Image (cartoon, rainbow, N blue to C red):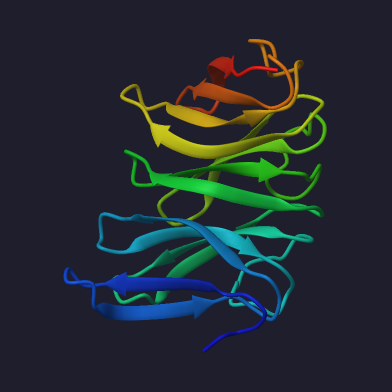
Length: 205
């Protein structure tokens, strides 16, 4: 059943496209899912956003819009869930499994407090969260400049690091390759511990 205004809706389909099961998760406000990825135990890791305290989230609610990451079993039941954020709007766009059995996720954070705060550079920052297999936080990093940044997608690399694509509106602080005008494509290579190896910007005026 629908929990409220907008729920996260997850459908598992069989090979012929028929529905195996579906789940709606959320609360009375606007909740949404952004990415899902299969896990080695035939379950799924899901990221989305939640508003308010009257939700299916069991972890702490931090602010206006929190990041909600939850692990599903193969039947769609929730194995565990975690919330991340601060007093403002925070969201995750992409999540992947990692070689150590954990997860890595990328998105954007407007907050300068809470449990994903590393250091706010100005506006919205690109945020990266590394989780252990049980959903506990391994580390988190924020990258950006005085404008707004967002991470759109993340993949693991052969050296156990990470490659991220997103956008930047800045030309300072963590944006070392310059800005070509307005909003640029921003690509970052991170080391295994989340430190930045290099970044590149691409775009026009």
